[in-house]
Amino acid sequence: MAITPGLVIFDCDGVLVDSELLACRSVVGALQAQGLDVDIPYVIEHFLGRSADVVRDCARERGVLLSDDFEQRLNATQLQSFKHNLRPIPGIACLLERLNLATCVASSSSLLRVRYSLQVTGLADYFGANVFSAEMVVQGKPAPDLFLFAAARMGVAADRCVVVEDSISGVRAARAAGMTAWGFTGGAHHAGAEEVAGALVHSGASRVFTRMDAVAEELCATVAQYEGG
Image (cartoon, rainbow, N blue to C red):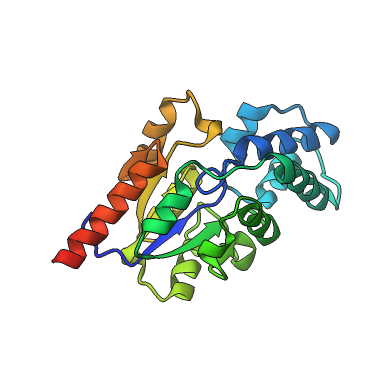
């Protein structure tokens, strides 16, 4: 890594919490109820790492106008599922305990959902108020707006930020923001999908990790390298 790291920006879903399969099942059910024939692979391919507006736009392109309360009902369903089933990504708490570096969260999900996810999984105290959502910017991922907004709020230059992302759109957003992008494929939604790592690299990820302890080792080694120098 050719930068002095100043901030690690974590995506939430699929990076901090193992939520993507739970969320995708909710999206499939909600869209099928509105008359769209979709499945989990379709939802992962088209909506992973993107905001709810993309879901609505995609439905419109397929000739279906989603109800006005679609997002509200979907959020309620997802939060109920998270309450009983959501778990943190293995090793993330240890990483956050060890890391002597500023951190924040930047997610395409609603702020309500992100904060609830962190609270349910016991991760909220690691980030405090440093949680940012696509609701706060004009354009969500793959546009760079959210990551640039987060870096500005944290007071760190873009070229000193490392972004940990599980989605192609997130990696593209990080690179568009001039940040170092690391891919992560340790979430349940990527299990067995060997081509995902290659797609993340092709999108701009300089490294891809399958385990959070490996991310921790790399980050801690990088920080130690610059502190020692």
